Amino acid sequence: MAEKDKIYSREFLGKTIVSKSGKKFGEVGDLIFEVGSGELIHLMLRNPTSYTDRMELEKTREGQILIPFSAVIASGDYIVVAEEDII
Image (tube, rainbow, N blue to C red; front, top):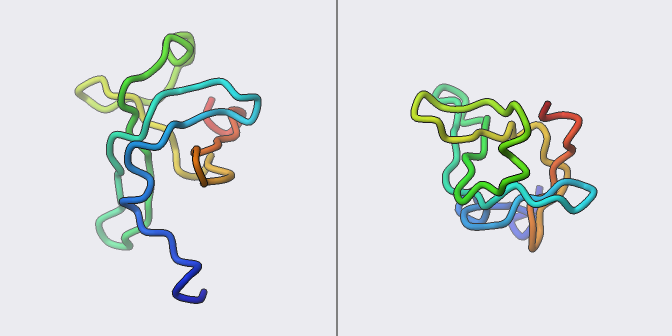
C-alpha cells in the first residue's frame, strides 16, 4: 500500500455512519482496537439515531452502541456499512 493510500484512524472520527440503503446510524465517536494486533474491531456510535433503537446492536457495559468494523464496506464523506453484517 502506497503512502497516499493509507487511511488514518482519526479520519473516521465524527463521520456519519449510514447503511447501504441510506439509513443513518449516527456518528463515529470512538474506535476500539485489539491491543495485541492493533486491528480495528468496533466503531463506537455518538448521537445514535432512533433507527438504531429498533436494532439489537452490541453495546459496551456503559450502553454505548458498537458497530463491527468488519461491516464497513466503504469510507469517504460517510462510513457505509452492510446492515446484514451487523445484525
